[in-house]
Length: 154
Image 1 (cartoon, one colour):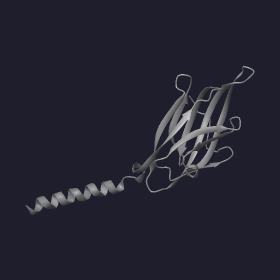
Image 2 (cartoon, rainbow, N blue to C red):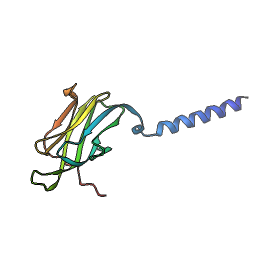
Image 3 (cartoon, rainbow, N blue to C red):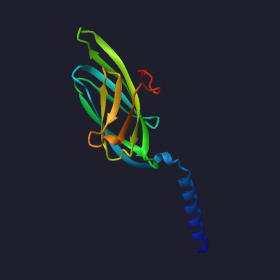
Image 4 (tube, rainbow, N blue to C red):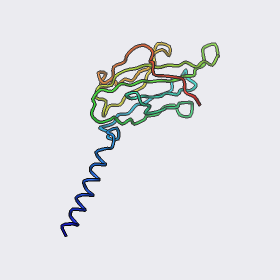
């Protein structure tokens, strides 16, 4: 009987050692949501959301899908997270030309878990950022272009 218990103890120790070796990136602390909507002037939009340098969501909008909300999980152990929004927005100009604008921006989310953010563009498609109207302090926008974005390859 003691040999049986030693085997169980040895197996349990091995399993716990293996679990301890798993990277912490699989543990998630919470989540938040982001809503992106197509403006009236837009024909289509493709937006990519990066959290802490990793692509976490792609949103595609057109006349059939004018708004989309995505859920984003946050890694455990951090309260502040960097974000980058990258996008291509296709519009019809007042002259009738079709134009595609690349938009991107960086920012910081402060304890975003449980928040609902909106992806907004401003300044004639030169700024693209996240905001929570109920808690403006939860998202900090860094004006200017991001160095993270590159045009997607289809």
